[in-house]
Amino acid sequence: MAVLERVTGRIGREAACAVEEGELSSEAVGEALGLSDSAARSRLTHYHFLP
Image (spheres, rainbow, N blue to C red):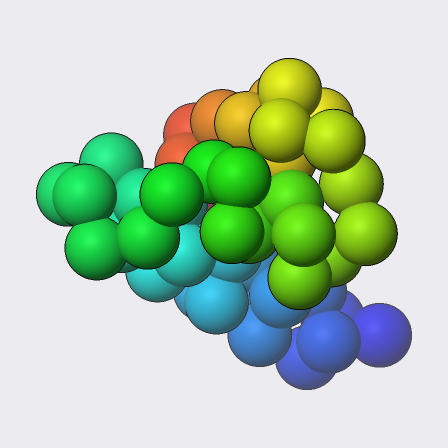
């Protein structure tokens, strides 16, 4: 389980940084995840601040 959490955290941070740098839009991320734009931003913010 710890391995899955580390991988998810790493990929989540990479995705959050990509959106922040303008490589992806939160709308595109939300669409890919089946979430609203605001829910996608919330999730990306969460991953961005993970240790």
